Length: 448
Image (cartoon, rainbow, N blue to C red; front, side, top):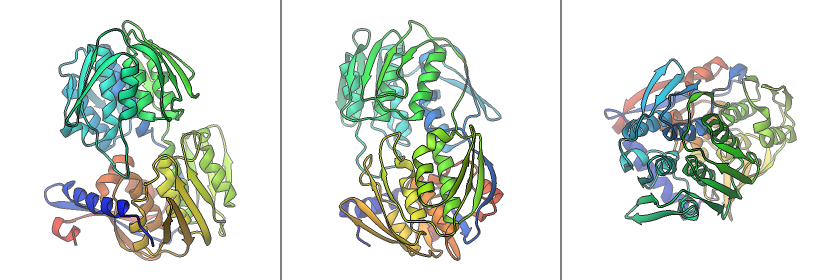
């Protein structure tokens, strides 16, 4: 297996970081006994990547907001902690979340909160819109390659904000109503969301080469409910016209296409058959097309997918790219699936070309993977259980898929990352027939 020096150094760095993300000197281990085809029915939970920007957008209004069926994930809790620091009162009622921000109490989003999750960076635009200024530290979260914020800064400056950066902290000030034309250098989900929030109160913007992801559309629909005029959702040119004052309301978040894709690929890797309910199949076109190319059988309805795996799938070439292309968040997970498919497949990622932190850990399970010129060649074979470590959310999803298909028992360290992106993972896998459990081990043992 060939690894770039960049990837190798990153793995060493994140391995150290993951050891700090433990409670009371103990680490969670996910144990999976592989070899059982997944079978059954599952309801898809709401999308984390839609919920987080919508939570940030709740800062825009002094009126109460109710979000129905919010995912109960670590990332959501971190965002709520940040919102509470800024002035939001919130209360859970089952899976429903009530939010109210009558006033902004702080305009500084500190590193100890923003550093845990990249999506928190977009509260900057909401602060700028609501109170005319905002100070925020560089974001953290999963680090699988360069993820700069230059397009965020470019957008706010194009809209007329004054932006200053000092030692990793950005300060922005509104000197006039924010308006203008933003031409992104490339489609950027976070940059598009940032600009949409920044002009939501009295501003106006045309966003050129905007991101087209379903989560952007969901944010746009939420802003419309508040009173913002948003046109062009789902296209590369979005026009946003803010209102002087925004209202409140009740909103339901879209289903999580990445969670849905993870379970479909897990069923494919184990040669199983599952049905997904409360899903948006149109958000998964690129994945469903690849599964059909591989020879799997799919039946699709307006809000359900029935998947039946073929016993002899074909190898694939997969290139992750911006929506509506194959999702970069599913790239590690499809790699794990392809590691079980006889023949040679190939995987590349145009969004994050260095997103291959899962490669070394999959190799521990017997996967034959060769990284050449930012393209991963995958020689499919039977995998075996091993002790491995999740280094980011979707790398963790990849290890789960590989472990479910492997012979023997796998122990996956870094459950923290899985809990950031997959709700009730253990119980949901058990419902599909997987043999899985969670245990805690002493930190010293986990480090061996």
